[in-house]
Length: 106
Image (cartoon, rainbow, N blue to C red; front, side, top):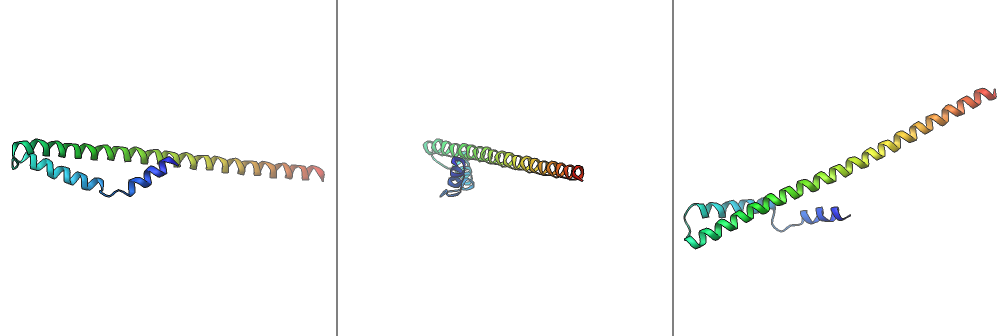
């Protein structure tokens, strides 16, 4: 349940990750372009670098979350298939027994 809540939270953000990446690259480009005063260059560079680091962190976190969800779904499907196969083999075994007992009763 906790994972679903985290995933829902990821979809309701005010600013998307891609917007953060674009703004981070823009600010970083301004800092490297020498168009700002020295004090602002350093601050802009740090702000852009932090934005890109955040983008990378969020991308990695979302990748891991989706991978975990995929693994969970795969395990559920495998478990259901195993249950289904077990039920089918049990039915076939019961019908085979019933067929043998009706033949021996005749």
